[in-house]
Image (cartoon, rainbow, N blue to C red):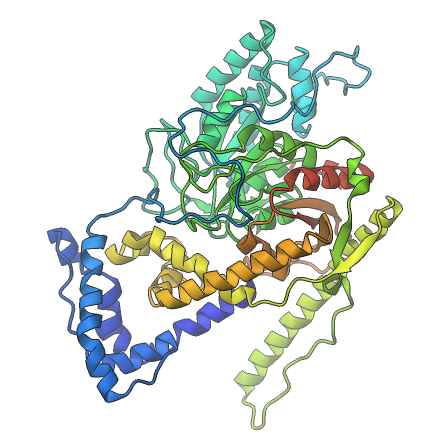
Amino acid sequence: MSLDRRRFLAACSSVGFASPLLPGILYTLSAQSAGAEEAGKPAEWPKITESMLDQAAILAGVGPFSEDQKKMMLDGLNGQRDAYAPIRALKMANSVAPAYVFHPQKPIEKVCDPSCEKMPPAKGEVLIDVVDDGGNGHRKIPERIEDMAFWPVLELGKALGFGKVKSVDLTKMYLARLKRYDSKLHFVITLTEERALAQAKKADEEIAAGHYRGPLHGIPWGAKDLLAVKGYPTTWGAGGYEHQSFDEDATVVQRLDAAGAVLVAKFSLGALAMGDKWFGGRTRNPWNPRLGSSGSSAGSASAVAAGCVAFAIGSETLGSISSPSTRCGVTGLRPSFGLVPRTGAMALSWTMDKLGPIARSAEDCATILNAIHGPDGKDTAAAAVDLGWLGADEWKKFRVGYLKGEFDPLPPLKLAEAAPNESAEEKKKREERNAALKDGRTRRDYDRRFEQAALEQLGKMGVKLVPVELPKLPYDAISNLLTAEGAAAFDDLTTSGRDRLLTEQGVEDWPNLFRIARFYPAVEYIQANRARTLAIQQISALFEQVDIIITPSTGMQLIATNLTGNPALIVPNGLRGADALPPPEIDDGDHDDIGGPGTPVSLTFLAGLYQDAKLAAFASAYQQATSFHKLHPKLD
């Protein structure tokens, strides 16, 4: 969630709420009374009156209406509201999607028929051939297996494929680290120990028998706890859902099982996929445990960064892979929308939710994506796309752009000046706001050094950078689609009053945002989707000029490309020095540049829709030239 958008929503929440309208009328329109819910009957709503229409018109941003117009509207509005009850009575599960499908691209040539039941065929070639070269190209296996904790997936896969190490031993090592560091980092919701040890034993037996499934065979991994795993709770990180379970594994879990990967844990996420605070506490950043890991893929990023799992699966709707990958110094891939099926995953926004890997390198992320992408016949937004993995040097042919405005010097900082007759309390608040603005600018200026250094490094790699800019569109305003869809996905949470069970109850948290979204007019929802079409068209046109775009991981691009469905790869880009500004006393979760000395910064690469292979190839080349992805925190 962007800070600008949070402020916008907070401002909206105050409009008209000072009147008797909210407690007397609006609340009864959006929530059932406890007695009515128990009786299974809709609440007895008061009739909508002309005076209510005047207030509602302010909320909806329409009118004012004449007296005659209001009289004509009343019967229709009362009837329209009465139509809510039979639909609410259906008690639709979160897994029931709307009757429309979002595809952010030109017409798809290959889409799995909705009736298909089988897994799609193998997707392209295996990224790494397991051929024993006598050990010359392999890292030496250490005497202590824990010294392999930070090895990338592909190196672990080679060691397993050649029989140099056992999956059971790796699995026990990672389980032990998860147990050891969870008290400090709070990233585990559920250990899947019994399942993991059985899978690891099977992997060792298959590899020994010559049945090697590929580079993920025997690799321990963790799932964000919005993915269903049969036999274990799927809590969505939220109070009131601690004991929820499902009878079938999510498609991504099934596919990783088929690849031979070993699920060791279900990781924390901020409640209902917001932030890093969940019903068990706050997930911490391994580089500075005083700070949160950000979210909502909080546990996935924290555990990978801490060397407690080889890789994890996260999800992103509006920054939930990008932000924790930035804070925790790991590599996160947000695939093109529709590339990975979301069957068995919690729905927040059907047109924006995406599942993707969090790992140590771009190459690892590509390997994982290779195993999980493609339609499953259930998620109708999932597209059949041949990723077309590229050769080692093909990235040198790419046209590469950078968002020039994001790298240019920042304009002078404007501080609030004293108002006439300013009171002592007002002066104190103004000075606090100005101090926060100064600190924010200091941090932003500091991190820009790393971003400028990245452009210089790319120049040394022979990349000719083309300045580009995002199309000028109201991305923040369009992103209200997210909360509208989220309010629908969790309709029963609001109408039953169970939203009070969620840990966070502030202005910027889901309970309040879902209530606000109840007043988002259907016409405006459709208009925002039409504006989204323009964004898709114009950003697609931008990627006809360049293949890759370099950008800081913050800024408007994060909102824009989540709306358009473009893929992003977030990579570590160095560590802040001892001269960095110390972190603030309170981590409000809104900023990823507050880590202070010794904490990581990141860089983001963007690509056109379904050009994820180009993205991985280019990011991998950058990582080979810089090696920032090999850095990891010292936990003891």
